[in-house]
Length: 435
Image 1 (cartoon, rainbow, N blue to C red):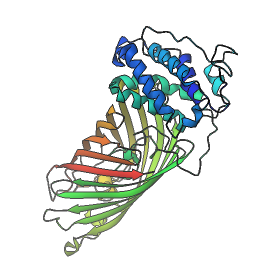
Image 2 (tube, helix red, strand yellow; image 1 turned 45 degrees about the vertical axis):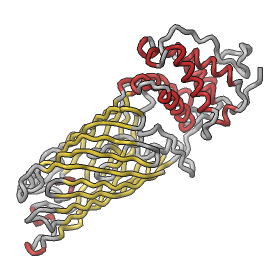
Image 3 (cartoon, rainbow, N blue to C red; image 1 turned 120 degrees about the vertical axis):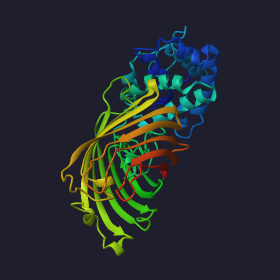
Image 4 (cartoon, one colour; image 1 turned 180 degrees about the horizontal axis):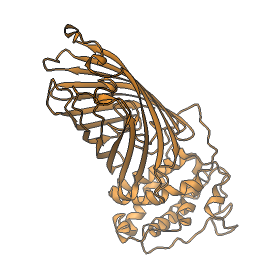
């Protein structure tokens, strides 16, 4: 039996990790959903072909006895899915022929310097293999839910931000660009850090979002950078326009600078605990004045009753990806006195202090590239001329690649001003691209 190269142990990442799982699946439905023994054999054949040709990890398998690895993975997948199988081997030093010292999963990987990007590449190839054989996402996600917590023992490389982006996070876990530029949903920021840079890398993206209601339109564009899956910086410009008299010439611009820091938890890997990923953020907003109403002598939001044309939003977000249920859930609590996100200024005759506003997002992961969800965002009512109500929407987000995402939504923005007393509803479309 050939010896394994010292660095070529990524294949044992899966082989040993699945074998060392303490609580394998017992639901027969998972085993059946994978097609039983015959289905698992086909999935494993495809999976092995993928990992040995994937440029991100293929070199790690140069010294493996591939047929033997394939056989053991079949046994492990079968047992792990609750099928009538038993894994017949254990990981031993240097060989896979039953000779050597048996080691647990953590000691196996302590010196291998496996990165998050490598771990995620392997898991993604497993997802792809199951997709190609018609395994429902609700079934494959349960397998990923069991694999994800093993990241704590398997990823042993010391954290350190590299100069080159690794695009190493799971697809869709960078979120999309929110209306104020932060990573998250369309209406509310999430605790996820924007982009696909893992803890060992960084990422950057640009976005454009357009919202059109009966009487108004809002365009938002900007850029964001995520560093080490820990820090996020964003810049955004909002351009708000009216289309119905007497506000058909109305134009308001606002600049937003955002900072977000992840504090604790991991929304993806910690599938065995209920603790969410938690982040705090701040947004500085500067209103650029009002255009199109000069004939009325109105050039500033303060002339509409706002106390100031700039202000800060502070927020804390908690996000959890529940692979077992194919759900993403997020809750955000924002301290703000912004009127219509700051487009109509900050504070007013109805109040001039920061109020705590709840925001909620829920998304169902249809598959690894498609999510369907809804959002709710409560807002303060500070201006007498602005009967401000909550925002909410229903959205679908598509992630064809890590470089591009498209989000479409039907949004309800409530009444904007007393001059057009109509509930504003309409379509929302956002495109994000990055690396």
